[in-house]
Length: 128
Image (cartoon, rainbow, N blue to C red):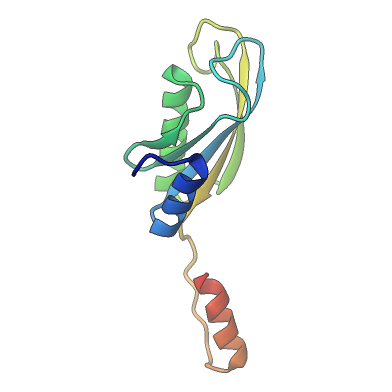
């Protein structure tokens, strides 16, 4: 991926059809490695763009995102709160709250019967 802004990277990934997760650091309390509003994009192979703090927070976020892509039984979008000391194993005593949004993971198997105007309109909607 070429050097882009976050929005350009997000658009490229969305159009590629590759499953990925958009991770947003929505809230911090106490000592945390990154500010709220930080974002990152993750696919099954690598952190694609951005950061939510580096180190252990980032590694755990990438692990969570990749698990969400790989396992369709996991919720599509989730909000997770981690205590950095207890849950992540860091020495700082803060908290982070992260929102994970899955894109391009197709879980639906849809069969449409009929070829009338309603079915045709439905197919066009499903393809977008």
